[in-house]
Amino acid sequence: NPVLGIYTLMVAVPVGAIFTSSVFMNVSTTSALSVATGASLAYIPEVQRTAALAALVLMVGVFQLLAGLFKLGFIVRFVSNAVMTGFLNGIAVLIILGQLGDLTGYRSRFANNVARALDLALRLDQVHIPTTIIGLLTLGLIVILLRTRWRRFAFILAITVATVLLVVLSLPFFGTLLDWQAVRTVGDIAAIPRNLPALAMPSPQLLLALVLPALSIAIIGLIQGAGVSQGYPNPDGKYPNVSRDFLGQGVANLAASVVSGVPAGGSISGTALLLSAGARSRWANILAGLFVAAIVIVAAPLAERVPMPALAALLIVAGYQGLRIEAAQTIWRTGRVSTAVMVLTFLATLFIPLQYAVLLGVAFSIVLYVAQQANQVVITEWVLNPNGFPKEQPAPTTVPSRRLTVLQVYGSLFFAAAKNLEGMLPSVENTTGAAVILSLRGRTEIGSTFVGVLRRYAETLRAHDSKLILAGVDAAVLDQLGRTGLLSIIGAENIYPATPQLGEALNAAVAAANAWLDQTSGG
Image (cartoon, rainbow, N blue to C red; front, side, top):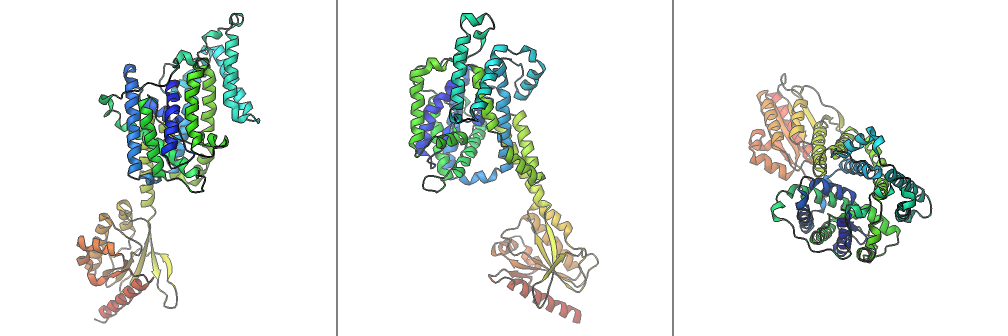
C-alpha cells in the first residue's frame, strides 16, 4: 500500500534526522525493507495486517534501539561483503521481477516473483496492451531523461507525463480505440487520505510470532544504515557513530509504528539524492518529511491518478540502479569461498523468505570461513643458524632421532584446524631420544581440541624417550595449560614463556633442549 510508505516518509525521515549521529542519513523506506516486510506479513490474514504491521515495526524499532543502547555497531563486521552483495543484488532482481505484473497488467497465480516472471514469459498474449504501453513509455522516458541535464528530475517528470497521458487517453474519444480506463492507478489500490495519519495500535497477540521476522528486518535495516554511516562523512569530515545511528533508526521506527508506517532504515539512494540536491544539515531531512505531509494534504487527489504501470517502470529503474554489478565482479575474482557465499545468498534471496535469506548467508559464510581456515594450517621447520636468522623449510614427515627439531605453526588452531594439525605433525613412531620445540608465540588462547593434540603428542614423544618443549607461551595460554593439567604432562621445565624480546624464549628453549640431548647421548 503506497499510503503506508508515505506515512513513513512523514514521520521516520524527520525523527531519524534528529536522533542519528549521521547528519545526512535519510531514514526512510528502502526496497529491501519493504520487500522483506511484505514477505513477513504475507501469511497474516488481511484483516489483521494493519495491527500486525504496527507490531512488526514496533519490534524492529525496539531491536534497533537496543542495538544502539548496547553499542552493537561492531556487529556489522560479522556480515561479509559477499553476503550483502548477494542479498542486495537479489533484492534488486526481486524488485524488477515484482513489477512486471503492474507493468503489463498480467496477474500471475504464483506467489514467488521468479515464478511470476516465468509465467508471464509463457503468456505474453495475455498482457493488457494499454497498461503495457503506459509502462514502457514511462520506462523509456526515464532512461532518456537520465542521460540529460534533467536527470535529477527524471522520475517526477516521467510520472507526471504518464499521468497526464493516461488522463487524456481515458477521455471518451480515445476510449473507443483501447480500454485506457482499465489501466490501474494508485487510487485503485488505495485511497490517499486528505489528512495526517491516525494513531495505530499494535497487536499484542502477534508480537511473539513476529520476533524472528522483526529481528531479521532490523538487521537488514542496520546493515544498510551502516553502509550510509561509513559512506557519507559528516560536514566536519568525521564519520558518524554507527551505534548512535542504530539508536536513531530505532527511534524512527518506533515513531513510524504509531502511524502504521513500514519499517525504515538508512537509505543509501535517499541519502545520495539528498546530497545531490544540496543538503547541508539535518534540516534537509526534517523539511523533507514535512513537505511530504503538506503534499498529501494539498495534492492527494492528483497523486491518486498516477498510473501503476508508471510506478512499476520507476521501480524497475530503481531496481536496476540497485544492482551491485561491479561489487559482484570483484567478489567473483576474489576467490571461491566469497563467490560461493555471494551466489548462495543471492539464490536464497530469490527463493526463500527474505527475513531468512540474510541469516542463511551469514551462517553459510561462517561455515565456509571455518572450513577455509581449517585447511590453511601449515607447519614448517626452522633450521637454526648460529650466525644469523633461522632458515624455514617444510616440516619433516618423521622426527629425526637424537636431534632437535624446531616447529612453527601458521594458521588458526581452533577445533577443526587442530584436528588437521594433528595429522600434519611429524611422526615419532620410529624416533628415539629426540627433542621437539613448538613455537606458540602470538597465540593468546588455545582451544580444548588443541590441548588434546598437545597432550597426545607429548605422551607419544615421552613413550619414545623424547620430549616436547613449548616456546613463546603467552601468560593466558600458560594459565590454560595449568588448568587443563597439560602443564604437569609436558613439565613446567619444558615451558618457556614469551618475553618482549623476540627470540629470547626460543633461544632459551633451544639451549635447554641441546643440553638435554647432550646429557641423554652421553648417558
